[in-house]
Amino acid sequence: MLTGMRQRAVVGDNGKIELLWPNVPKGTIVEVIILVDPDEQDTTDYLLSTDANRQHLQKALNDLQDPQNYTYVTFS
Image (tube, rainbow, N blue to C red; front, side, top):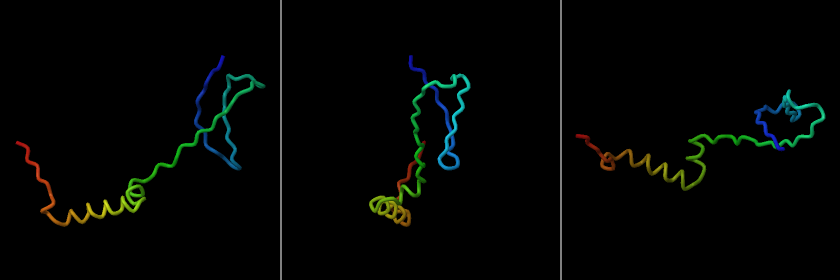
């Protein structure tokens, strides 16, 4: 029967990862799969990551300079 256990760990010196599973007997054969959390990209980095994004952002900033481009909403 296959049993699973999930644990988070931090990679230490020389790439060492230590997992503590006190209920698993010594000598038990286990399979370990390592999943690495991707670095979250900063929103500003994303917005500036491509030429198209940079152009779109620059156009939006330029549009803010002219109040005629504003859309006004009135709630009644």
